[in-house]
Image 1 (spheres, rainbow, N blue to C red):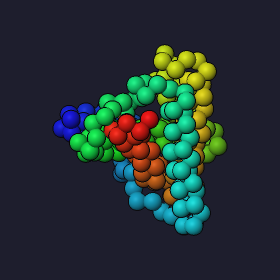
Image 2: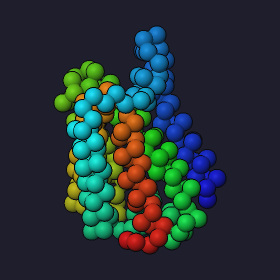
Image 3: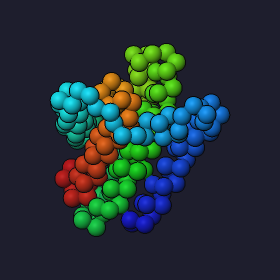
Length: 202
């Protein structure tokens, strides 16, 4: 399971990075490195107290509200982490790849790194961050639409959009444009969900 998850995670990371990389090569290669352009760099945190308060508050909200939505608005088999159902400790390594590479890093590169930064640069923070968050929410809502129904999918869309906006805010306003904080938050939330499935805690 670990090897197959590692391979699929790397393939998804490459696929999700392809369009951003091509756009960087065309439009920004001579201006800055790809890593800086996409935000995959060390955070520059100036207001540390505010950053950590909001980061851990957001993570707690992410985990608790995510738990409620998983418990009341979806069937456990509907979620991507259902592949870890009942596997126990044997799935820990695979879950780490799933949480931090296949979903966390891939989605952060696309939404907060590529879409968010380009829109913010073009139309300003408020509009740009809101659009990337809405797209992030719609992606997750669409994944559940056929199983959870229209109303539940809408609730999931709104919830994940709020989380997407919050992560964009932390990155751009408190971490110097780095996507590392949202990557860590995203990865921890997905790891939590995977572990709940691994040990049958739903």
